[in-house]
Image (spheres, rainbow, N blue to C red):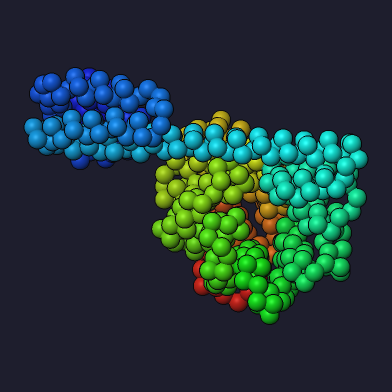
Length: 488
């Protein structure tokens, strides 16, 4: 608030406008509008502006109703521009930012209402499937599960769906759905049994998709070379079968593996090709665009990363795990651009979305990523709570990459508190976890964090080898260097 008072001269009307907009002084670069006599002579327009802002602060019934009120406000701003150019431009910026925020809120609210209705109908159908199973009408139960199952396979109700699927007789039409659900729940051994059954007896497209899922399981279990072998063959099979959508799925999965292995150019190539093959608006294409955003972030190309992520966001269903993944990556962009507050808020929101969708892994990543940004804001307690929660979530699913990330960020909290021994112990533990895997990008990040820890303590000689490892590994990743030596 002091910056706002300084920038506005403490004028009551200007302060009220800032309060109504929900912005701070920095949000509209008020340093460019150092106001000596802020709005002091805005006769009738002053009172009208305040009254109109008061209306805008009330809940609007629709974006259209809000837009009509905004038109009135814009007319008043134009009057201000005629009489007081500098003050008028400041008001214009405030109106623009306020409008965008409120319209965004309204659209999100409408999306949540639509999503709630969507899920309510499908939950009723899932309950109906349960009743059909209880009554012995298994064919009707199977039909209902085929209808609504895909909506729940990767959601907070995946456990309920799995229970229903296991209670009906084995049915080839449900096998892929069962495997997908078990993969989401982290039951990889169970999913692998189902997928191997499909790979032996399914139709050619079913067998191919089963191979893709087996490659994804290997990726999740950090068996990256195995995953690359399986998925490279799946890409060849899909191209030979001339099934573009399945080829796109295989390429997207292979791109994810190459990103973990540190071959960012190869990952980019596979993902760009997948985006061209997959149908616009499809969930798989949204995921591909999100993965592309992540690769571009790793390459330091934040502008194009943001473009790809916003393209994905334009097609995503609100409140889904895809929504959470997009938000996590947008948070990373904000963090890399130095906007710690927006990054921390975005990570917190993405963790909430992920937990609502039942995706513990994404929630752990989001909470861990929030830590460094909370620390930049000197919000140490918020950082500590976020780091500890990230560790707890990662431990429940046994994901080594998520747990390493969470441990490293908890180490940063201890470093901020000056507890160097515990900070060092957590960071070294996180390195040990990642070093067992073939994940050079995460390893380079851990090296850099340890180097910073020692540099902060003035231990330059201890920091130097870690800094050299980090710089060398990052350079190779940026260049797409020899995969056989990356991480060595």
